Amino acid sequence: MKMNRHTVIALLIGTAVVASVVAKATPDWSAYPVIQQQQPPFLQQQHIQIAYFSNNRPYVRLNGDIVDGDYERFEQLTRNLPAGTVIHLASEGGIAVEGLAIGGLIDRKKFETYVTGLCASACAAIWVAGVRLHATERAQIGFHCAYNPKTLNCGGSSNAVIGAYLSRLGYSYKAIAYMTAATPAEDMKWLSAQKARELGININIVRLSDGR
Image 1 (cartoon, rainbow, N blue to C red):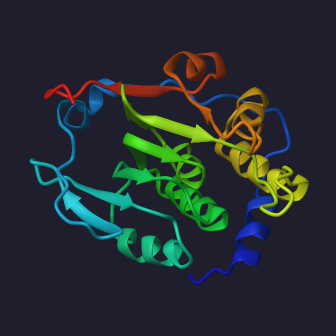
Image 2 (cartoon, rainbow, N blue to C red):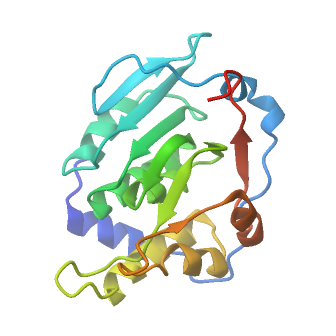
């Protein structure tokens, strides 16, 4: 389905959960041994691509800036992939509305998300949409508010859209406040394993067998 930015924002606001919100339930990581044993290989340098683990289980890698049209590209690429597919993210961010749309699709399709290095801004918004959240010990996952690039002030309506998106994903008010609080002056809030536990965000910390 082709979606423009106004459609995406309307959907996010229209489906927001405004009642009491609870944190995601703790998943059973023992059912997912493959991702705990190895780092996905870097097979190509395409922006969005399908690759395969050694057992031929597919995963999707999204690498680089999130740009206009990425939602459509991601939707087409993942159309026939099953629930539980891992989305491996490596990005400094990009266009927020594209990231929110991709995250919404990940949530609907029950995909898992995985970060081994840097994933910030719009990338982090995609990562939190996973039905199960994976990250290595060295992963850097950063959040900030939505802000006006001219004034550098956090935008009320834009932050409201992001808050509605996070609420629909099932995050607590405390977690949402953390993920939308950092100002441009503060640069970024980097999510640590300890902070995630405090916020009720359940992460599978992946310890790669090769020690990287």
